[in-house]
Every structure is written in C-alpha cells, then in structure tokens.
Length: 409
Image (cartoon, rainbow, N blue to C red; front, top):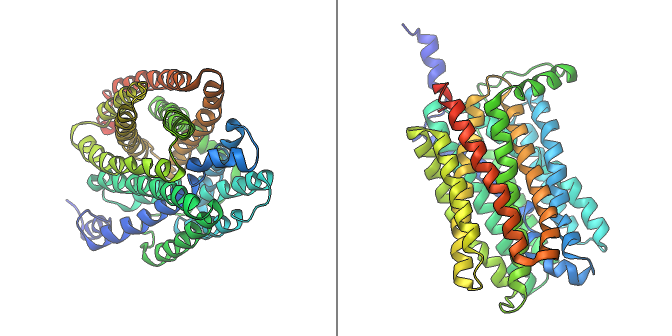
C-alpha cells in the first residue's frame, strides 16, 4: 500500500495536461529552437560561402561539420558535468553564449576565423540537448515522457527550419551577416524566456564530481546491446539525413533549377512535417512499441531518398518531405527509448546517443561532399541509401532485443 509520502512524491512528477507540463515544454521548446536554429544556420548558405570565401563545397560544409563534431565531444563533457552541477544552470549559460556567438560570427573577416568560432559555438551547443533530454526523463511522469520528448524534438524541427529560412531569406534581401545578427537577437530573447519559465528540478540528485567514476559509468552504458544499437542508429540515420540536406542546396542552385537562396531556404519548410511526426511517433511508440516505429521511420527515409533521384523538382520535394517525416519520427522514438532504457546516469546515456548523432552528422556532411564532387547527386543518394540500410538492420536488432525485455518496448 502506498504511503502518503510516496503518493506526494509521485504527484511531484510533471504530468501531461497540467500547467507545469505546458510551461516546461514551452521552455525546452525555446531551448531546442535556439540550439538548432543557430546550429544549422549555415547550411542553406554554403553555396554563398564557396563564392564569398573562395572555398570548395566540401570546405564550405565544414561550417556545419566541424560545429557538430565539437558539439559531439562537448556532449560527453556536459552530460557528465550535469550529473554533478545540475541541469538548468548549465543549459542557461550555454544558451546565452550560443546566442552571443552568433552575432559575433557575423563579423568574421575570414573563413578560417569563422570555422574557429563555429567550433567554440559547437561546444556551447553541447550544454543543451542531452541535459534537456535528461531533464525530461527525470521530471516528466513515465506515461507522459513519449509525448514530452516528441514535443521537444518538435522544437528541434522548428528551430532547424527557422534558422535555415531566416538565413536564406535575409541573405537574398540583405546579407548573410545581417541574417546572423537577426537570428542571434531572437535567440537571446528566447533564452531569457527559457531561464524564466523552466521549472527547477525536483528529482535530480547531484553526485560528487569524480572524473574516474564518471568515466566508468559512461563506459557502462556501452555494455548494453540495446543502447549501443540505438547509438549506432543515431549515427547512421543522422549521417544520411544531413548528407541529403547539405548537398541539396548545391543541387538546386545549379541548372536546370537555378533557385535563389531565399527559395532554397524556404525549401526547409518541410521540416514542419517533422514536428508532427516526432510527436505522433512518440505517442504511437508509447502505445504499440517503440522499436517498430524506428524501423518504420528508417524505411520511410529510404523511400524519400529514392524519390529525390528523378530530375523533376516535384519528386525531389516529395522525397524530402517523406525523408524528413521518417527521420524525425525515428529520432523521437529512439531518443525516448534511450532515456527509458538507461538504468542510471540518464544524462550520460543521452549524451552518448547525441554524441553518435552528431558524429554521424559530421561524417555524413563531410563524406557526402566526396560523393557529390565525384558522382553528383546519384553519388549522394547511393551513399545515403547505404547508411539507411544499415540503420534498418540495427533497428531490427533493437526490436529483437527489446522483445526480451518488456520495459524497453
């Protein structure tokens, strides 16, 4: 029989439909917006960098690839530090640094300095996503985690979309520098809202900062076959997703399309389908089993990639929509499953997942440039299909392993 004290502790968890749930999710939505709007702000204007700084497409892609690389390694650091220093304070500081750096980057005179500042910004980005996922896993009531994670991933899509659209449009109307200043100011305002709105942690229990112990617990997550499979899924899915989006702009800027930066930026409006699929897949995964929807998402991505092969712009748009729908749905489910499966140090487990996720982004974003330079769009598509096929097999492995443990389903 549950005691009164245990009942009160249960009620302290944030439940779906409450004011606290809405407030927490809006705050984390703002954090996700800031992170991904600023992270992907250079993606639609890479063709501009090739002309303005006289660099190759592969070199221009480093403005994103190096950022995601430093982000990936930063995640391992911040995920561990947050186990001792708490969640909200680290996220708040990193959000402010991120916003200010976007304004500073707008005034870089050389591409080399631009890349250095983007690497530093990548480290600042790292203090947000894994800790946000850990916060959700700790503070949200168990049956509401899937919906909350889906809403948070939805913030990722809106942020990624907004950063690209703002930069594409502002570059055509004014300059890419003006776009970055505008985006940095918006991010700063959203960051102040985050600091005010996010409820303090009630279920976080700080641990002494012992690097040896933290490293040990980090390694212990790699002993779980389910978690390792999920980490690899994140690597390959994100690698394929970023490859397509990185070089789509180059494809659409050349004949027969010759699209402007504004139109290319607005192409990312299809990210909105990811806002829907992340929340929808999250809820369906809670009801019918998460691994099944990772597989479904990966298969949809495969279909979307194949649809981009025809010359017709219509088919390319449909393909990107299907790809985006499948990616964010699968990512939402997989990230939620990591938080649910980790038996200890949730922020570290989330950090490892996102480490693999952004390593995949760096790998795909750069390696895809080799296929683009040598084989054109067919090469990019072939490379991406290979990554997604591996993802499907890994998802099938997760489904098989999860069938042995109903807590993971």
